[in-house]
Length: 188
Image (cartoon, rainbow, N blue to C red):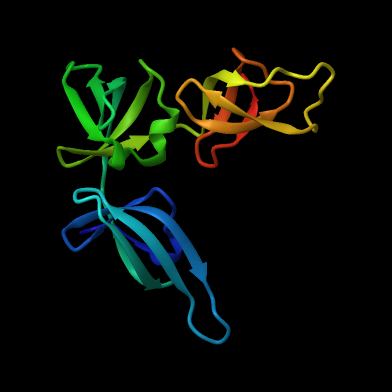
């Protein structure tokens, strides 16, 4: 029996099965217009063909979830189009396209141990932790005496991701970033 979830319980980043295709949810909005029935508007990407799709479901409609296996793997490198991972037990290497990686690629650091999601034998994405520690590579100099509630400034991290950080953060500082929102959390 296939696992299902009500449309109102879908979350961003989740993998669902529609027909024979697998889709990763990119955005979703739960709408309850006036005296009409509630529905969920969903923007998703087919992970095999990389095409985008917009879909609308009734809130109580059952959607089939893709059952995924997870394996711990080590991130090795990327060549622009693909990201390469190695199984730490069998030393087998796999690749995942940058489109399938989505925003997760902005939080990958070389040699990091992460969980890779598989649908059958096909790698379909990665699962990151809630937060990741990254080093600030480039930002304007910190201001002496600046407090945590002061102004923010842009900072480029070691992965190329640009986020806003408090003004007391300097180049070379290690900071904690929330992987869901892409926001600065604290110094690491």
